[in-house]
Image 1 (tube, each protein chain N blue to C red):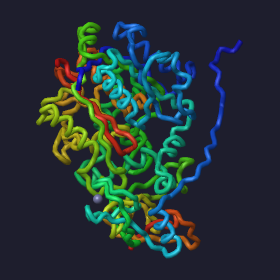
Image 2 (cartoon, rainbow over the protein chains, first blue to last red; image 1 turned 45 degrees about the vertical axis):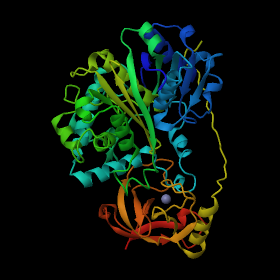
Image 3 (cartoon, rainbow over the protein chains, first blue to last red; image 1 turned 180 degrees about the vertical axis):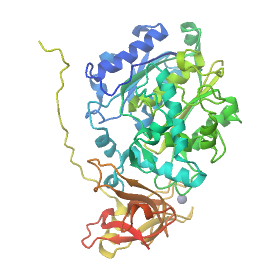
Image 4 (spheres, chains in turn red, yellow; image 1 turned 135 degrees about the horizontal axis):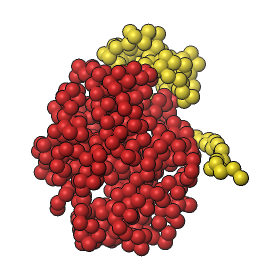
Length: 385
Length: 147
Ligand SMILES: [Zn+2]
C-alpha cells in the first residue's frame, strides 16, 4: 500500500441496556468526542469520516441522512457502511483504506448501535435469505447453539469449560469501566442460568447493548506528529464464505475465520500465532464461539480449546490472553462491537488498558469480527513499524 | 415540568415480494407438485447444492443441472429450543437441525419431528414428511422424522 497507517485516537461510550437520555446521533457524538480528545485533535484536523451501524436495528435506515452534524462529517468526504456484526471492523478498515490510499491524512471512524430503540430480532430477520431461511428464524442464538453442540460432540468438551471462559470474560468486564455486564459470576452461576437452546444458557449469550465507538486513523507522517504512541495497523483483511449453516458444517475446516487469520499470519510471517501475538480481541457473541474458534484462528490444535479453558491459558494473566476487555459476551452494541475489539487491542498495545491491561508485554495484537455468519474481518496491530 | 427524556413510539410495516429466480422456481414447483427435493449440480466441482443456486461459488460456473437429492438425509447437528419468542415458528420445546440430504453436499436447516427431543442424535437418519396441501415453499416439508 502507498501509506503506512496508525491508530492515533480511540474512544467509546459506557455501554448499557438503555440510554434514554440521548438520541442516536448524540450517542455517536460521545464516542467521536472521546476519540478526538484521546488524539488531542479537533474536528478541523479530520479530513474524512466513515460511519456505520446495522440498518433497521433502530427501526430506521440511513441514519447518516441526519447524523452529519453530530459525527463531524458536515461538508467532509466519507461514507456509510453496514456489514452486520462486522460493521465496526469494516468501518475501521474503510478508514485504514482512506488513509493508506494517500488521499486523506487523518480519518475519523465511528460506529454505534442503539438497541433500546428498535427490535433487533426483527432486524435480524430482515437480513436472512427470504426464501430458504427466513421461516426458521432463530437469530444468532440458534447458530451458536449448533456451534456448541458440534464442538461438544467433536472434542469431548463439557459444559463446565464454557462456564470457565464465561467467568474469565466477566472478570475482564468487571475491570473494564466501559463494559456492559459486570456480574461477579461463579462457575455455578453460569451452569445454573436458564437453558435457552441446548447447550446454550442465558449467560452463554451476549447482552443487548447500547453504545458507540470511534477511532482516529492517520498516515505515517501525521501519526508521528500527532502522538508518541501510534498503534500501527500492520494488516487487515475480510474473507467471505458460503453460509455457515449450509457449508461449514459439512466441511468444518473451510471457514472465513480460518482463512482470514491464516492470510494475516502468512502475509506477516507469523508461524506460531499464540507465541508471536501477545493479546487477541476476538468476536464471540456466545462463549461457545470463543471455545470452538480458538482452533479456527490457529491459536491451538483442533479440540484443544477446552483444555486451554481449564488451564487458564487465555486469562488476563495467562500465556496468551484473549478478550481481557470482557469481550462481546459482556458487551454487544452490534454495529460498534467489532470496532471495540480494535479500540481495546489498540489500548493494550499502548499499555493504556488500565485495570484490564494484560500481564504479558504487548507488542502485537490480533482482532477479529464475524458477520452474518458468512464473513470474517481480521486485523493485526503493532507497537513498532 | 417533567424531566424524563421524551420517547416517541412507532412501527414500520414492510411488505415485500421475493422473486425466486430461474432454478429455484423449478425446484419449488417439483417440491409442490411431485414431492421431489431438488438440488443443483456443479459438474466442474462435482458438488450438489441444496438449496439450488445459479452460480457455483467455487468455480463461478453457471449451473443448469437440477438433480433430485432425495427426501432422506442425516442430522449433522441440532438444537432444542426451550424458550419462547415471537419470531419462533412454533411453541417450544421444538427441535431443529442441519440435515445433509443424501444426494447433496450441503446442509439444509429444518425441523425434526415425531421424536422426543432427548432421542434426537447427531448422525441420525431422517426422512422428510410432506404437507398434504403444498404451496411451493420449503415448508411443504413439515419436518424430518427418524427413518
Ligand atoms: Zn463449481
